[in-house]
Structures are given as C-alpha cells and as structure tokens.
Image (cartoon, rainbow, N blue to C red; front, top):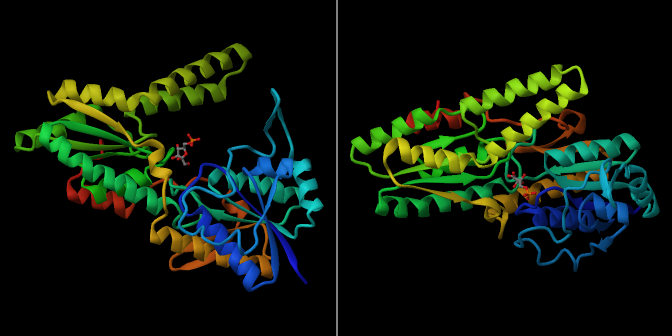
Length: 373
Ligand code: F6P
C-alpha cells in the first residue's frame, strides 16, 4: 500500500539539504512506492499547510544546489510567533498531518529541530529526523552534513588570510561559526595552519595568546593567524557567565531574578563583540597591527562538497528504508562507517561538545598551536 510522507527543513540552512531531500525522495519514490510532499519554511509551513509536491521532476537537478528548495525557518511548534503572541501550534500541525493522510514526517535539522520533532512525536506523529548543521554539534552522531562544506570554506578563508597577514606583518583574527561548539574552528584551524585556535570548550587567556604571538615574533615570524569560534570566551568571561547563571538559578524573588537576567544580557553584549575586543587587546600586547575577519554566513552558502553530498544522500536513502520499515521517533545517525537509527529521546536537548582530550585537540597541541590555555 502506498505510504504518504511529508518532509521539511528547519533551523539554519546547510549545504547538502537538497541532496538529503533528493536522497529520501528518490529512494521513497523509486524503491518503496511512497508519495512525498514538502512543507515550506520548516514548522511554519506545516502549521500553515503550505505544501510543494515532491515528484521525480521536482527532485531532479537539486543535488548540487546550496540552501534548501523548501525554505526554512527557526520557528518552534510550541512557541510560534502569531501576531504579537507566542502560541503553541502543535495541534494545528497535527491537523495538517492528518489532513494529508501522512504516514510519517521527515524533519531535517540541527539540535533545535531534534527537540521540536520530539515534541510532535509525543503528540502522536510518526517522525524520522536527519542531522544537519555546519556546527557538527548534534548528539549521538559522529558527523552532520553541512560540516564538511563549511570546513572547506573556512579553511579556504584561512589559507587566503595567510598571504595578506604575512605581507603586512599583521595578526589576523578570523571568527568562525559553530554556535557554542568549536568543531568547525578547530578543524579549519588545523587544516588551515592557524597559529592560535580558540574554541568555547577551552576558555582562553588573552595574555597567553599574546605571549605565544610575541614568541613567534621573536623567532622571526611577524604575522599570526588566530582562528576563534563565535562562541569562544576568555576565562574571565566564562567565569562571570557561570557565576551569574548560578546566582540566577538560586535567586529567590522577582527583583533578584531581574538583576541577574540584566547581568546576563550585559555579558551577552560583551560576548557579541569579544572577537573585536580580543583583536584590540592583542594589538596592544604584541605591538603587531591587527585586523578582524568575520566569516559569518558565507560558511553556509553555496554548493555542498562531494563528502556532504555523499553523506546527505546516504542518510536520506537510509531514512527512506526506515520509513518503509515503520521505524519512527528516531534520528538517522552516522556511527563509524554505518548509518544507524538512534531514539530521538537520546538526542533531543543534548549537545555534542568538543571533548578537551579529543584527538583533534591533541593534534593541535602536538603541532604547537596555541589553544589559549
Ligand atoms: O547553527 C548554524 C549556525 O550557522 C551557527 O553556526 C550560527 O551560530 C547560527 O547558525 C547563525 O544563525 P542565523 O542564521 O539565524 O543568524
């Protein structure tokens, strides 16, 4: 009997999303006699019943296209901005699901999407998710698609920054995405030959970074490349954040809570400009002219690398197989050389940080890369 499947992409876009949609869709259509519809703009399209039919024509020619043909959003089913209110729209989404007689929904997304998908599973939806994000921070999978493409873009940027830093005898501080984890910065820093790599998992000391750059200068190297994660923090800031969060947790009355929330907002503002602050401090401490490059969303754009196309396609086709087997409430995950399913309950609400003794960290240390600690 024909099965009816919905699919959506949610959260920040990632190269490889279209390859994954194509992988699920082609296998579903060709091998398993399924019909597929896509929902536009993530969970918002599911709520608003905005669909696109994914027949073989729609799935053709999308393998190499960046972004997502379905559109995406960061909307959450249980906290949807409607007018000027936040509303729980999970029941409306259930209605859309039933209206199309869906047997299952496939959600392609990062950490937030896994949590949102689990909420709908708890309402009774049959869901399978795929792990995508350039951050590589989804729990219970070795890797996410999008990471490899972002890694090549960030590495290419570091390669290019080398020649200009070298010519001008400057420090160039390059900020890499990755949210609160350092996978992308660490890998791009190693692959691009950065001299300093700063990641959120290892709070840094500005003085120690400056000292390592000064030592390079004394050895005749009058330039340095500092790769820093957008979420990296100095030890001082990390402590301030931890202490304030602990105080907020213990705060008894409204006034006290308000005070610590205000303090957290201040720390967040400080953190938002911390790459610029670090660059200025390094210039002062080393006497080397310094510049900042923020890579930003360029890391998420353009065509996926062959490795990401391959990964997204493998996860997509394995997903169609799991749909056919009726295995729901799971995420497709990479474990060694296999694609396996893991329960969403074990993924949702967790984040895969870089362990401080991870082999990549050890590699960086062995190379003499300064990690700021
Ligand atoms: O999760 C992917 C990511 O690119 C993060 O690296 C970054 O912190 C965030 O999304 C940026 O989000 P937005 O596209 O909403 O600005």
